[in-house]
Length: 160
Image (cartoon, rainbow, N blue to C red; front, side, top):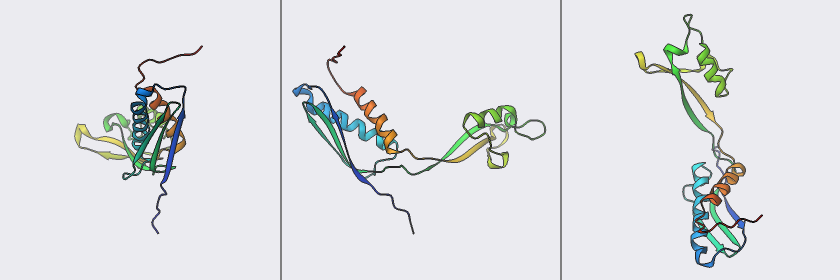
């Protein structure tokens, strides 16, 4: 039985101080576009999803029609090192290879789990793993922060 992912509508509202009436549409569209774009980059938005922006003097909002709570996992192929550097004279994993694997969080990976690809001087070792897809909560927080930074506000007001 194939696993289907459930897409739900998502409404994001940002309550603000008084926004300039002449800028409402532009601010609302910018906020909506930025949120939609960030969530799309994290593969949390269905390809057929649509977004609708809303703006009032004290609120910016976006309604996105089809959003996942968790993006699907995806394959990652990471080039590690050329084979000339990856192995010592005994054919074992060299210190640079062990450090590289540790820095990526795969210190317990064996040489058998790595893939050799290329020929001659271009031969290198690759790590093939499945990366966890983004979750909506952390991606949305990042998207909101980014959307606020990108708002086309002519004159920022700061309160002390």
